[in-house]
Amino acid sequence: MVDPTPDPDSGPPAEHVTAPLFASYRDSAHEAFQAPSATVLAARAQRRGRRRVTLAAAAVVVTAVGGVAFAATAVDRGQPDFTDRSPAPSSSVTPPPSTTPSPSESSPSSSPPSRSATGPAAIDLSKVDWGNTTVVLPATRDDNDCPVGRITTRGGSWPEADGHGRGSIRGSYAEGAATLGELDGEPRTEAVVYITCLAAGGDSGDSSGQLLVVTQRGNDLVGLGYVGPLAQVYGPLRITDRRLAVTVTQKYGDTSQQRTYRWNGTRFVQVAGPTAFPSPPS
Image (cartoon, rainbow, N blue to C red; front, side, top):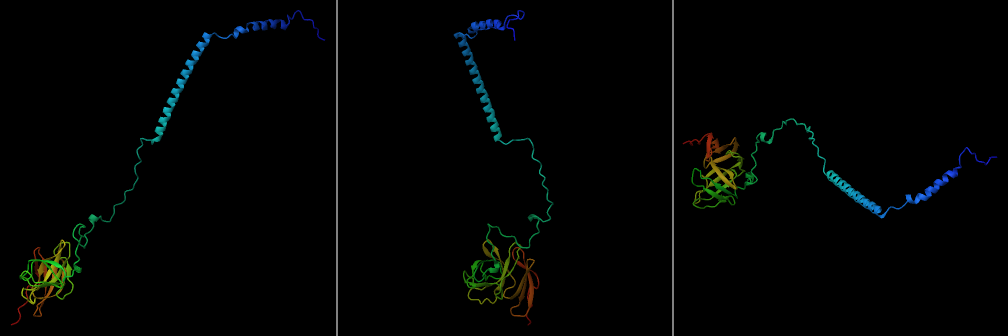
């Protein structure tokens, strides 16, 4: 059992020490929590207002700077990135030289060059109807029976006019096709036909037949020149190397000769074969 009598050596009880302290705090507490004066409160409010304005301005500046940076980034990303790197050199392989000649180096063709698209259309001499066509006749002939200039055949002949008798043109003496070939050195084909020119007044034409070389000039058929002797019988013809070989037979005899003619730029001249038939026996 505890003795309630206090020990005189242990000092006063605890409540006797703390009670005065709590009483002192209670009596002075109103001083520690006393509200500040109106002047202090106004100064504090003014400082808080300036702080809020400063913070708001700083926030605006930060927002603006961030927006500009974002916009610059967006614009910059809208464009392609350019680098200073040069493109890699091409590694194309040079093909070996072709052994096929170019068009400018190609060998010449044996066929004549085509006419320009803007020039006159070429006349196919193999399809000309010589009995129904227009020909410009030349001036060079051994007699004056043939007209000079443009004549037109109808039904195989042209009519008498201007002091000249009627005449005719056909493909050959035997009324076959014309002989075609190149004779004047130009890139075109000529036709060798048989022509008769009658004297005015009803000549039978027995002594007027001859060969005529026809070519194309522009849109016209033009007589280049007459070939061979008058009033003889003409057999097969052959064109070789711009030369016309003619088989001609004496009309009232049995003598046949091979004569060759060439164009000299003005007329056809004989370059090979006999130049005349022998005289008939007396």
